[in-house]
Length: 240
Image 1 (tube, rainbow, N blue to C red):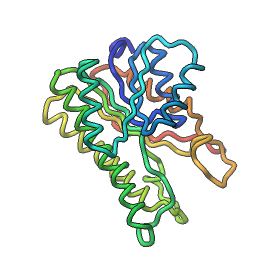
Image 2 (image 1 turned 135 degrees about the vertical axis):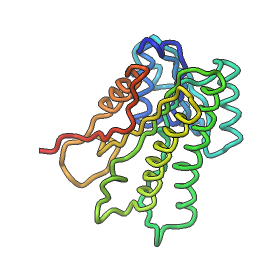
Image 3 (image 1 turned 180 degrees about the vertical axis):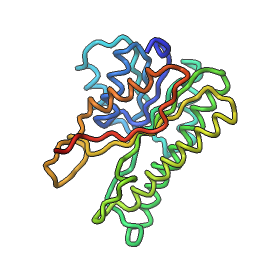
Image 4 (image 1 turned 90 degrees about the horizontal axis):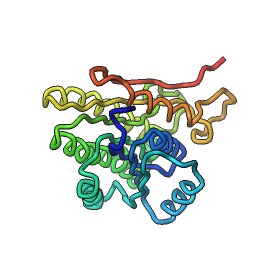
């Protein structure tokens, strides 16, 4: 992790268990982590958890940022540029996830899926990549995904969620080719996770991933040599 020490990592939602675990893992490695939260109550809760956390080597900063609000997101990225010179790693962890069918879902819910899982994702990618390209620095974009978009259950009621997560996979692959064309030193990685303990609601008693497993994987991917890129990973528990 030597190359990322004192560099800046943005996590677009640090309030859920995955975002918080990744934030803690990277900060303990000496990286400066900026976590986005979307309202004041969430900000206070995450701050409380940070105060109870063991001492870290890096810096952790929380920004109140609703990534659906493009103007607010642009302003926050500008603030990061002014205070920290720019962003070096972007971890897209924010997502909208409820039961919603394409044929019967409400227009409001479908709009929320598109606004959060696609539009906001692309906005953050554009702003982060712009910072990396402008400074001609090494960068990495990690998109947190869901294995459900690869193995669609027959009885799933998450049709729209699955569609937006499939879009994330396509965006990830398109970016890889774009950055190669632009000769930008930016890696992109798609991490598709299975059921996670304490997060994913399932009726089965099968073993689930632990949040710490996901955090360890993120750190492992960032620790790869500069010439090596992990395009895509499917992470799931071993089911006996």
